[in-house]
Length: 204
Image (tube, rainbow, N blue to C red; front, top):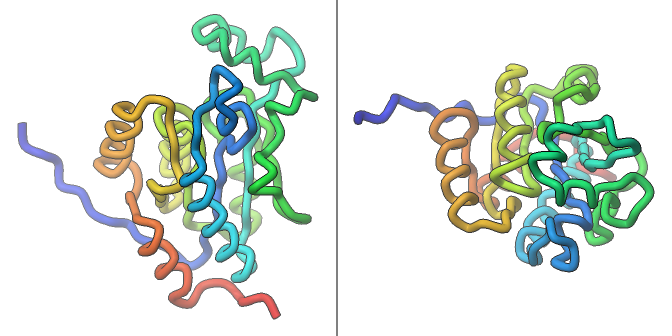
C-alpha cells in the first residue's frame, strides 16, 4: 500500500511546551504504571530550561481522581489507573521537573490533555500556535494529547527523546504513526535549534 504524502508543518510564531503526565506514577517503577525514564526526564529538563530562558509558555498535566464517577469506564478497562488518586504522591509532578511560578498544571481525567479541560482556551489566550509535546506514556496520553493538539489546529511537534512508554514496541509504533499523520517528530537537538532561531524573549 502506498504511503500518503506528508509534509512538515514546522513551528509557528509562538510555541508552548506541553509536559504530559510527568508524574510520579509514570516515572517511578514502584507504581504499576511506572517505568524507569531517567533519559526522558533529562530531555524534558533540557526543553524546560530553553522554554524558561526564552520566557515561553509551559503547561504540565497530571491525571488525578477524586471520586469513582470520573472516567469510570476507562478505569474499568484499565484498573491500574485507580492508583491516580488525588492527594497522593503518585499524581505529583516528578520533583526533577518541578513546575515554577506561572507554569500551569492542568488536572485531567481522560487520556488527552485537551478533553474536558481549559487547555485550548489557555493556549489561545497566550497566543500559542505551536505545541511541543513530551511526557508519558507515548502510546496513551502523549498520543491522545498530540492528536487533539492538531485537531485544535495547533502546529504539533513531538520530541521523541522526551517521551517514554512501558512497552518499547508501542512507543515506536505510536511515534511512527504520529509522525505519519498528526505531528512533526523532531529530535531534541533540532527542536532546540528551532527554538533558538528567534522566538521568545531571553530572560535578563
